[in-house]
Every structure is written in C-alpha cells, then in structure tokens.
Image (cartoon, rainbow, N blue to C red; front, side):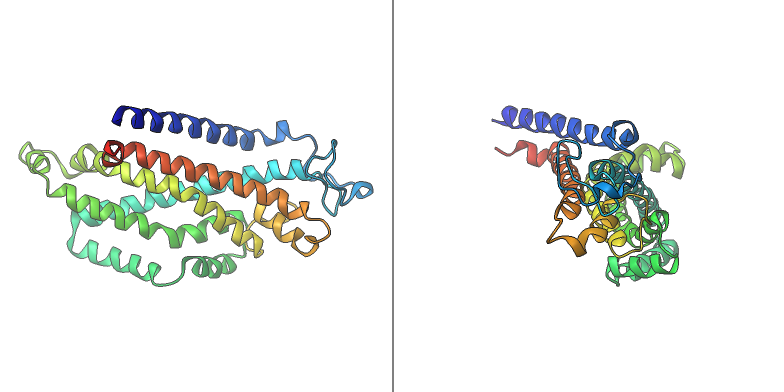
Length: 277
C-alpha cells in the first residue's frame, strides 16, 4: 500500500510539474504565440463576443482578449514568482540569523516581524503601494515588505530545532565556522519546509498582485495584467461577461495549478504523509 501511494504521489508530482512548466512556457512566449498584438486597437470589432477569430472576444477598444490574457499571464505569473522568491530568500535569511545568533539580533528582527504581522497584510500593502504611486514593481515591493515575516518565523523555529541537534555540536567540535554550519547543516535541513511554503504561496501572491492591480495600484494601462483587466471590464460584466471571465479564467487556472503542485510537493516531502495508507 505504501508503494502504491508513493507511486501515486510521484505521478501527481510529475503531472502537475509538467502542467506548471507548460503554463510558464505559455507566459514566457506569450508574444510569439499570441494571435494578435495585445495592445492593437480596432474599434470596428470592439466588444465582439467570442468567435473563431477571437476565441475570448474583444474588449472595448477592439483588442483581442486571448492575446491580452496571454500577455497578462506573463506579468501576473512572473511577478508572483519574483515576489515569492524575494520574500522566501529575505525571510529565510532573517529567520536563520535570528535562530542562530539569538540575543539582541533575534529580539530586534523578530519585533520588526511582529510589527509587520500586527496589521492586515493586504491593507498594509495597499498603503505602501499608494505611497509608491503604484506600478507592477512597486506592487511587488509593497507585498514583499509585508509578506517576509512568515518565512522568518518558519526559518527561525526550524533553525532553533536544528541548532540543538547532536550533529551541530559535532560540527562545532570539528572546528566548522558559523557560515559553514549554516550552509552545510542548517539550510539543507530547513529547505524542505520553506520550499513547500513558497510553492503554496505562489497562488496567494498572484491573487494579491491581482488585487492591487484591480484597485489601480498595480499594473498601469495599457499593460495587460489579469487584475487590471478584470477591473476594466467589471462595469460591463452583465452585457459583456467575457471581459471579466477571460482574465478570471487565467487567474483560476494558474492559482489552481500552483496550489495542486504545492500540495503534491508537501505530500512528497513529508515522510509521515507518504507512510500513511
């Protein structure tokens, strides 16, 4: 039974990894596979419903919605990946330093993290993005400022647990320097949990970037981004629903795939989960 379960988890991991890879390739090569220029306007076909020539219809300016969804995927997906990478590296570095060094450094950095966690994340990000005057890069910066403490707490707790292990004491006796202990022993032992958290967070970060863009604090027109596209089409949803459904479908599929991949990675890396059954 355990072997069958493990094989199922491996098969799911391969399947979802391939699907996510295809999604990333579609976003990366959106300019090459888009049937039209996503910013090309043609008022003669404005607000045309989905058809063979325009599968997702056109918007109020006559721009092909399929092309804009593909172009928006490049902005939305890679912004979320960049944001996740930044908060993962930053939070993990802070957490390891706090857990390993302790004392004053731990107290100061963890109090800063507590302050960040004391306010609702998205509300704080809205305030920061507004001060920075919006834009995709500023939206990523705003979300990074409020999102790193979670990783710092995870890395700190795992570092404290690993630090008390016998093999760390043996490394001290062998003459390893602090940086050697961190990179050889601590980081490899906490990387699994951090990685799983990061993969599961990609979908969340994508939703939060879309939320900022929906509120006008993310991508600026005419740049295609799923949140801003939904915002542009929401006032005409009853008459022209494809203006909202097309970018909404992009968000739904992307978030679902990253969440499924994250859940599968968690099952694959969790020995207790793999032994059940």
